[in-house]
Length: 617
Image 1 (cartoon, rainbow, N blue to C red):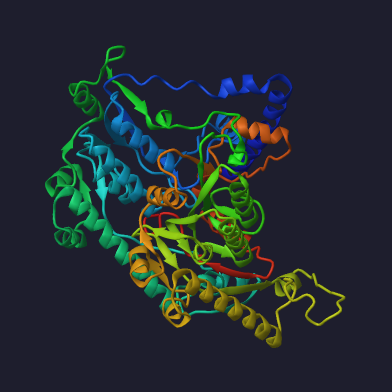
Image 2: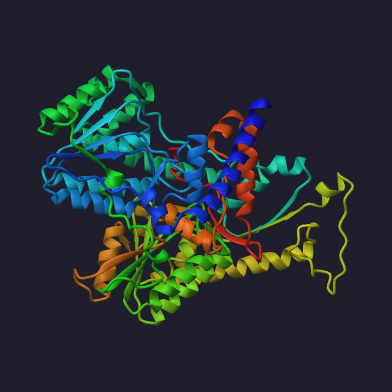
């Protein structure tokens, strides 16, 4: 208990000091001075430098950055958040390094730090495409690992040379999907849950009503894991030049390899200490005369990130050339204006789409989706604004990232072209309604509810009482109506009849390659492919700029928002306290899960069991 209170007090102190620090900066520092303190100049790239790609990051779809509160928290707790980089800026950096005469090669090291919906499998595969493109220059890609996760090894396996620390190990023990089930917990505490739903495979309600996966849901999740594992083994077997069948047979018996065994298996190329690795790179002609180290430039310093003070969210056109707007939808879709990588508000995306097509310089929109869905009303609002953009003559191309399912697929039904990666998780065409009530819970503490109303069902969507059988029939009819609307949207967007769409619907989830083969996806490809196609539709050649919504944020941007009264405080307990108190982790996960359930009609199209790094985390 003492440790718990200590952690709580420490976190509380961060918030207090953050506020005090803001006050000090507000009164004593001018924006320009503040920016100069926070932004150090990028180091010069010297000839024969190696670009160091440190995987110790959260690789996301949407641009993120460092907030003012992050700076305060790091200063007080000495706990830095994982660096956040997004796919497009990483791909651009790798593409730039390919033709940069000062870059002699790439060193890959570190270990991914997934958070929220970052480090998705398909996203990492696209990052590897960027590394493969770099390798066409003939420059080496060298990897150094200690004890990589399976997700890390996906990247390491593509290196020309891969070395492991003598004390390192490699664990290749397959994939798993684990979910939190609150059925018995909610009953125990007197929280009633009533459900209306469509589709045999729509298992999104199960975490709230059951203690385990249904047979149908278990079947589709198993199928996804098996397809992904087969792809994973095939990928690394191809890169390390051995048979995936033999590798799989070996892993059934032994899946934990020490360094010596990893060499014997052909999974790595050598055993080096880090100092020996540095000597190897220096031998390749990359000596830094100043400190007997190799010449290096960190990926974070090689990125082309905007400077503080640039316009937020690209709302104001600031390029003199035609623009393609890449708008990111990452996280559970909710109502409102939030966008933090975990949840994204329908209103926020609508505003960005509207700002884009209203800009005379914007000639096309690419909607990059990494979302398991969520609120029907939030998803439909986004869809309607996409329709408006196309009506105004602005082409809209949808590019699916790691996941674009349920509501994430709903918003993709109206577009000029739909791209997905082979390993994108998509589909889940279905709708459900979740209706909690706290009547029993309240009565246990002597509390009761009363209401004055004009109609027996005026409090239908409240949480103070269970719904009657007649009311549940009304709500079921509403959900079925939304499901039919969903089917019609898919049929129109994909050029199918409703009967055919129904065969692939019922909430069933598909892998991108399967979705392409049955017609739910029009083309396989990544973010670059979608941008190039959008340029073609807009009649653009090479003379266009890509703007991103949102843009990368800096502490200075956050400071300006605080001065404008727009700051959003999102203080979350860090992993240290959660690791010490597993019970608290469960409660916080349950709280976060329920927080996303904000649809005004309590209706959702949502793949609730999906988590970032599905199968690996």
